[in-house]
Structures are given as C-alpha cells and as structure tokens.
Length: 441
Image 1 (cartoon, one colour):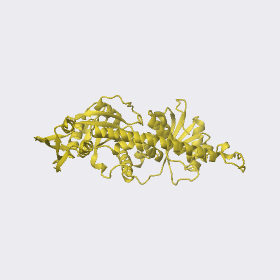
Image 2 (tube, one colour):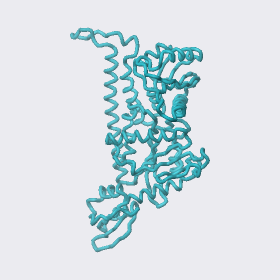
Image 3 (cartoon, rainbow, N blue to C red):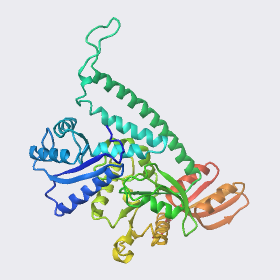
Image 4 (tube, helix red, strand yellow):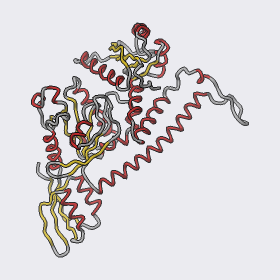
C-alpha cells in the first residue's frame, strides 16, 4: 500500500477542491496543497507536479472529471511520475480506476499519512498502533484488481466444494491479525494505565502539549525541559508521547507530556489506533494548545485541533469541560516580527520556542492556572504519618497548621487533581475535617 521512501520516486500531488462557499477559498486551497506537498516530501518523495483541481461534482468512478484525468495522464507520462497522491479520501473503486487510467500508482491522503506514521513510529506501542491502522485501511482495499484475488482455492479434506476465494482468505488473515493487534494494544493500554496510577501516587499534575503537526510542540518541550526530543521542521516529526518533569516559578513540579500532532482530515483509522496516546490528553490537568501563528492557515488549524478534541469529548474519552483547562500558546512569534506584533489576549500566551522569548510568561500562566483551580481542605494527620505531611508541603500550599498531642490539623490549598491523589494515597490514615471554598481567582 505504501510508497517506499526513495529520493528517486517522482510524485505528483493533486488537491481536489470543492469548497467554493469559503471566502478565503484560494488561500485555504493553497495552504492545504502546501501541507500535502510537505507530507509527501517528509518521506522522501520528489514532488515534480502539484495542482489544485476544482470539482464541480465528485465522480463516483474516478472522483476527478474525465478531462482532468486525461490532462493528468499526459503530465504523468511527460514528467515520468511514478506515484500520484490525491489529497482526499478515495474509495477503493476510485483508486483502482485512477491507477488504470494514469498507468501509475495512486494513493490517497489516508495512505500517505499512514506511510509517514509507519516510518516514524519508534516504540513498541507506536509500531502496534500504526500496523493496526494499516490493516484496517487495507481491509477496505481488498477489491483492487490483483489477479490472484480472482482465483479460488479448492476445498480440503471431506468438505469439497469450491473452497474460499483468495480475497476471502486475505480478508480473514487480516481480520485475525487485527484481533491479535487489538489484544496486544489492550495490554499496552493496561500498562499505560498502571503508569498513570503510579504518577497519581508520586504524584505531579500533568500538562499536555497538543496542537497541529509542525506547530512547534517538540521544540517547546525541549526548551522547557532541557530534553532532546527529535524536533524538525517537518510534519509528524515525533509520534510517541514523551514525558519530563519541570519546575514552575512557585516551586511546584509538573509533568510535561508531548503528544502526537493533529492534522486536518486525520484518518479515522489513526484516531482509533492512537487512542492510547490521546488518553494522555484526557488525564491532563492543563492542556497547552500550541499554535503556529506564522502559518497562513493558523485559524483553520486551530479549528481542526478543536474538532478532534470535541470528538474525544463526545466519545467520553475526555471530559466535556476540557476547554476550561486549555491555555493557547501562540508559537513562532519570531517569524512574524516578535511577540508585540502578535499581541496576547486573555487565555493566550505569545512565545517563540526557538528563541525562548515568552517562556517565563508561559510558566507563570501555567502556575496561575494551577492556583486558580485550587481548593481549600483541612486534614487531621497523625504525627506518625510524616510522609503524608511531607506530601502536603510538597504538592500543596499549607496555610495553617495546629499541632495536637495525637496529630496535626493542617489547612492546605490543593488542585482538585492533587487533592484526589492525596486522598487516594493517604485517605486511610488521615481525616478530612472540612472543605473550604475554592481559592479566590
């Protein structure tokens, strides 16, 4: 299914465009085409032809009109193109007919993204997720015109009969492999769940980076943590989540999580396969939505990220009030004249991850958001429970302490997540005396 990443592979990128109702139609189409070219280039394809083809109506047989197909066929022949990328979702029939008409390999947006993910997956979990997505996609492609799929294998033993066709056997084998992969991924999810439980016992609040691919999440992650996560000016530079601890100006420690980048029309196979990765976002106390303010289609990219998160909320993967935990981080201000040229609004922080400009403001915003959500609670802690007292001092703000012969009465400000973690770990040995009002904003 995939295109081998070879520098000698000459490709054409074609964007079928059928959104004339948008006011910024021409700019949006060019931005989408540029993104598709970037996707192709990121796996070593040499793009020798790129074009936006306006569609009056989607043709069931080929998607494109016959005149457009004929013109594209001439281009393929003249430029010695070996693969044509259609930046849309093709049905199996449309893909087969276009390959026949053009005389070369044709892949759609989904196949291209799957190829990129397959090349970038580095961990066992990422490899499993990509293989599952590939197989889910391949199972829908088994109508293609491989000659061996038209033959039948004879029955065996006493059953006789015409036997099963090769296409049925292929579908069955893929189905069996999908079942095994889902079983392995479920084990990965259970393991990840155990890791999350361990973090709750440690515990530190989670701050998750989300955003459109190539928005600069990994660069920001490296700048805040001093880590060396792979970060390049390319789409989907990193796939697997990475976590590091950082210290905020108040002295609190949080865990920063770098997640997979989003993209418009993200294949449904990948959304399902990468559920375990996206669950890290669901566990986050604060979500940093990193945006590339220098990108001409930054507003549309923001909408695409929100659409994915809203889909997670509808499916119950993330809480419905997830937007209350979001801080928008407007990155790459250095490419548009600096932070003053962008201008921050309430709920936004303008930065340049590459130069470090604005990072102290971002850390302060995280600190302020953590404080804003804090609750006041009082606990009676036995004097013998030094670990519980130390926990409250490290992860909360102890505002009052009164010592008694049998223990200490401690009034403390905690985030809801930290309070839940504390009571989960020490609830059997401490007594909650009273709840106070939330900390004033």
